[in-house]
Image (cartoon, rainbow, N blue to C red; front, top):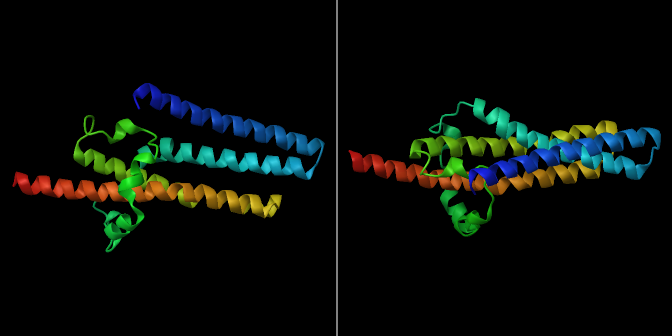
Length: 187
């Protein structure tokens, strides 16, 4: 994906966010004038869709650049059994199937290996935050009712993040091994 395609993907995400937000406002106004259970369900669905999209844009485009993370921190260490888990999950077979929001950030032609490591750490934290923040709409069960919509959408939205978290950890572990080999070779 080149820079032009990357911008198009980002633009599409922003448009979907605004359309879901606009649709939610229309449904909200319609429900105020003509209260119906179906319209409430549409309103809640669009509200949750808007939140999930806007939250992902905010985390990835606003919060991530402000994070100062240490790739050597304990949170990012490869845990015992983690590599075995990746083998069981066959990450190597499906990792190429996942889309990358900003592929240019992950190329060795544009970044050094230490820069790639920081990028991977940031991406992992992004997806972990998105996973956690996907459950925030559960608080809206109280004013809106409709628990099924909030529970199902929150669980599904959070599960979308799991393969990306796994992928970042898998790739980062491989990159760390490569960096250690490079350092040993340079010494």
